[in-house]
Image 1 (cartoon, rainbow, N blue to C red):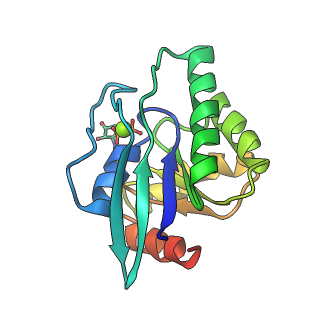
Image 2: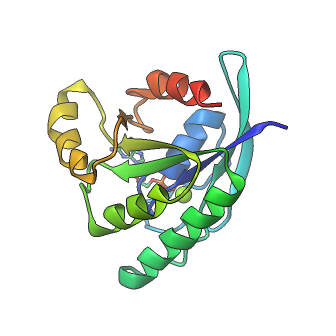
Length: 164
Ligand code: GDP
Ligand code: MG
């Protein structure tokens, strides 16, 4: 069976934008309002003769605070159950937030391959400044990408299919 790759992360980090880029489709709804993706979306992705099933997690009833932490928790656990590889997306524009530490802590106990991806680094000139805070999480390597502008995308995809 095809490997399953799950995109997880807080609302608005860019999961659906990355899903769209990876699947080259418009299936996932991208909306500037946090938490707008209501459903889980699946599609097949092909990259350099490799293929896998990508899952865009969503359906988060996002109201902030504890609800957010709880949603990330259940989302992470659900993704961990069904996925072979997890892409944890982090938001470089928002920077490191407490929920990021929580989800990283949770994922430490998950026996899956995990790629830690810092999204919204829209070009090389932003990389040094925006990436630095995320090393506080203590996870490496950190993958750099701009789901919207394609920066780092091919490198990420190469790294991802190596994990399959
Ligand atoms: P999701 O809630 O995690 O699915 O996030 P979305 O994919 O819906 O994106 C949330 C917002 O972030 C939208 O306004 C996107 O246009 C924006 N966004 C996503 N990726 C990037 C990126 O690489 N760079 C920038 N600057 N904005 C992005
Ligand atoms: Mg979404």
